Length: 146
Image (cartoon, rainbow, N blue to C red; front, side):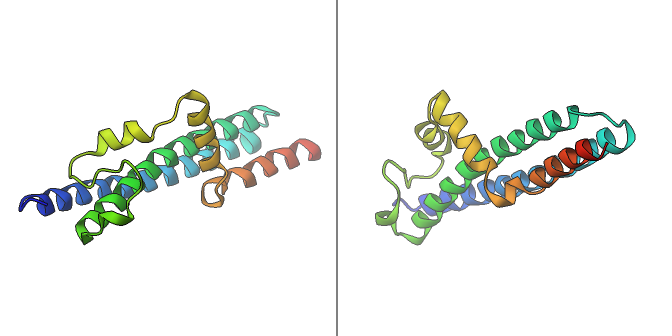
């Protein structure tokens, strides 16, 4: 590794970590927005099925957002291993060279079906599914009450 490589890796780590954290904040914003919109649609406007569609759309959007964050997280792990000087424990075709995020992103991005599958897998993780599942249950419960 060149003398400049550790500095480049540290700069990349700082940038990626900041992005990783900002994606977490945006995911929380999606969840809070979903709660607000769902409550307005159910309790104020007394709509019937629209809240289910809105919750599902925002839940999938949260899954997509978390997929992006997950890719950043995978690159962060590669950079951290490279900073530790342990490239032997890196995933296949993961460059331990700094400033390789877009190449790594493109190499890990599946085609359409795989991409949709990745979005759904992220959406089904408990930390992503909450509060969307609760909102869907609330909407379905309101449909049966009214």
